[in-house]
Image (cartoon, rainbow, N blue to C red; front, side):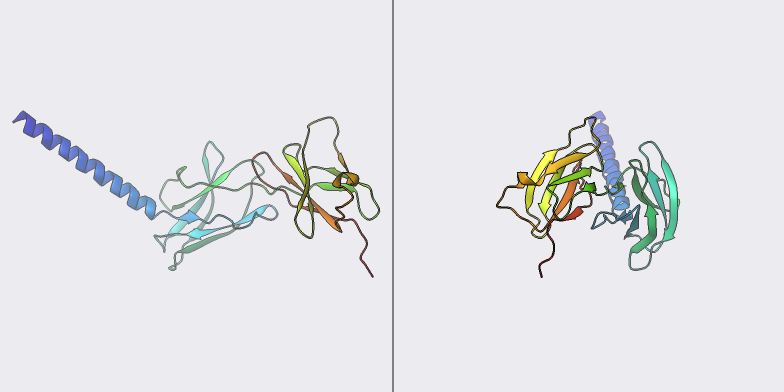
Length: 208
């Protein structure tokens, strides 16, 4: 008798666990999701749009700063399952965004991290007739890559060494005599893998 009761209790607990898991999975499948931007955000905003399997309904956009959520905007998903909060500012500090149905508490599942775009290195000296490039990196980390602007071929790369110098010099003679690109692009790759916007440098005058 006791074994039978024990088995019945275990079976009931298993069924309850399966039921909770199914309910959680169903709720998760119906949760709204933000689209990952196809391209890196330009400027200081991004388009906060996505898909809501439970549409149409009222939605809330939240920002997570690593410690707590802050409500950012409200909208309503359309019958086709899409929603759009419009352009939203990208925080200068690290942050992530989350969407939930109105009345549903936000959580850290399915956070979308959006970072400030990395500006292009600032070129101080270069151009037609110049024998070196002088520039200031966007940040003092990662590496600088120099590419042929026409072919996107990587010509050189070097780490950014943190020192007292605020600007860097790159002699064009180090590209070699066989490589004579008409224009260059300088981009910076940060330690987390993000790339800066490219800085364009014209090296030769247009041919007649």
